[in-house]
Image 1 (cartoon, rainbow, N blue to C red):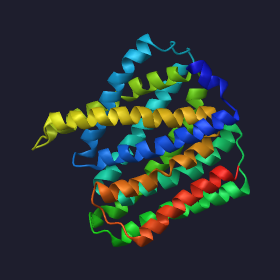
Image 2 (cartoon, helix red, strand yellow):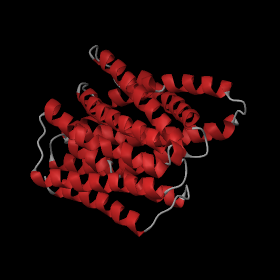
Image 3 (cartoon, rainbow, N blue to C red):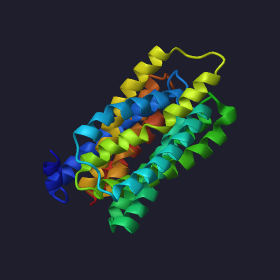
Length: 300
């Protein structure tokens, strides 16, 4: 499978597959975000998810994929640092703010910086039409966050701080997207990067979550948390794995923008599952996000 994927790099078939992978990643990432924001503490949820996908990846890392080249070890260390900072900021944002306010800001801050990073690091260029599409998409994302900020009543006393953490998280989204794209292109076999990344990335947050659980006055049952962790771990592997493969097959910037249609799926999940308010204005803003993604894809 690795040889087949590598053969598609830079081809039209690779472009189409990258598009599909980015959209799959968008949907799964919205589900992943909702799992963190659900009834369990976000720190505990993240720890359970990370330990699950770390254990899932370990057999593949040790026994299935080729061993990483020597130059990959510093790259893995860098990825661990960047992703840990991203998770800490995201958990803090989710604790302090409503999901449908925080999530769009997190996802909306990333694409612009990712496109700039893709230009600097990978020499990618984008048409004026594509930049216009990015502006349309971002106007929908930030408009959605602003509307929710005005109208939602939950956790209003901490919303300003939550938005600050959300913006910082979005910056790290851009950083890890660009960095991971570099990492997955630096090894001969993309699945080597994926397997070792998920195993190494599953180390830190479970320790933080375990310490937090021990300090709680009312400790939640580990059974339901484990179920959420396993389901979230499976989703994370397919979500993050899909977007990483998309960035190897095609432009990093385009994949990053298309993934931000996750804000559309997040709004739907927030309405159907988390019972958060949705109205015609929010639907119009969600449509802007989808339209922006279409413009970016067709304007290349």
